[in-house]
Length: 149
Image (cartoon, rainbow, N blue to C red; front, side, top):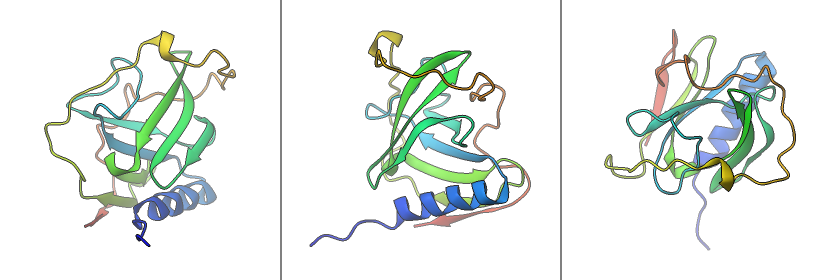
């Protein structure tokens, strides 16, 4: 029997803590060929996403992948983030959370998904949901993150 990493459990725990405290959970992730994010939102092979309940629809945090739908400039997109690519989850308001050692090389290539790759049954989302443009560069404000190896 193989042991599942503690990483997905810690990600879910920090997300739940953020939501319970009224904070906005942000997820910083590496973007590579297994990552599906909207075109133009990744910078330097990374992206920071608001994964709060008001910004996401159908959020699923499995042991190997995080998936959800979100609006970017009013357009719904389906996102897919491998748990192995997550480098931090933290509260936007105070920077408290957890950082993780990257599980892959730094030469990760970017993959951007065209709008025609979106499911046709995407449900409307709240237009007030924030996208990553104009949000932090992945470095939390204020508090410190603990790096888990």
